[in-house]
Length: 259
Image 1: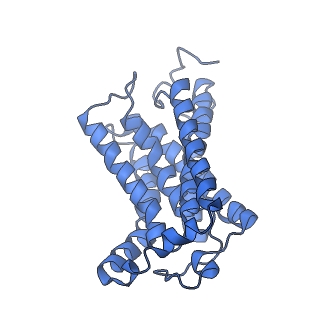
Image 2: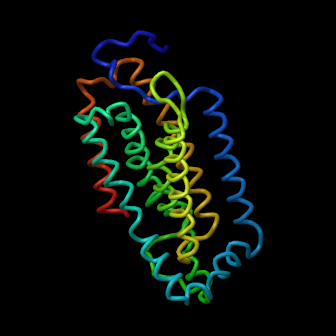
Image 3: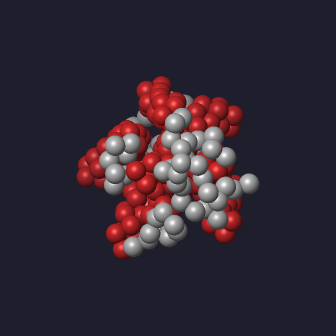
């Protein structure tokens, strides 16, 4: 049950309004992405054809150089800065309204990353493109299995809560031209980082689409849980630091041990 008048110890913590219609829309987006995943996977040679179609471009120094560094290092632009922004938001008034949004992004990445790799990757055990098709010239070689794409998951796990927030108009957040522009920039960044895995030849299209879809549905689930924690007072100004400590530590452990 939602508490209309939260206690003073909880009054400074707000999450964007994620009503039923928004949840259904995001669930529909996940369903579409996962249906597209099945289509890409089961159409004979479609996954191969799409990755192989970039073989010639991967021999171009400009194309290869840009996408190599972009796909390999831009992921660090998400996890570390998000953690820093979250910690700074405890002191910086302009960022305080976004504290729980930052926490949602950190939670989604921290919880979902080990579920993708190693749990899902080992469960499905889909070989990397160059293993299945030796003629595919990947920009670099990655250990482990291919499905689903961890980079694609993390790209959207870390940005989707902020994108939703920037496009929301409610009692706490107000949508305007600046926030819409920021949302578009973050969405472009997430999409290009996810599909850079395809351009680099280290993932199939089905890997990328499933990873994005998993980030979307996990964001919906964790946003609902976070709102329940806020409404019931289980997450408040007094104990928030423990949530921060746990999930920031998980993010850094994921970066060190998994990514």
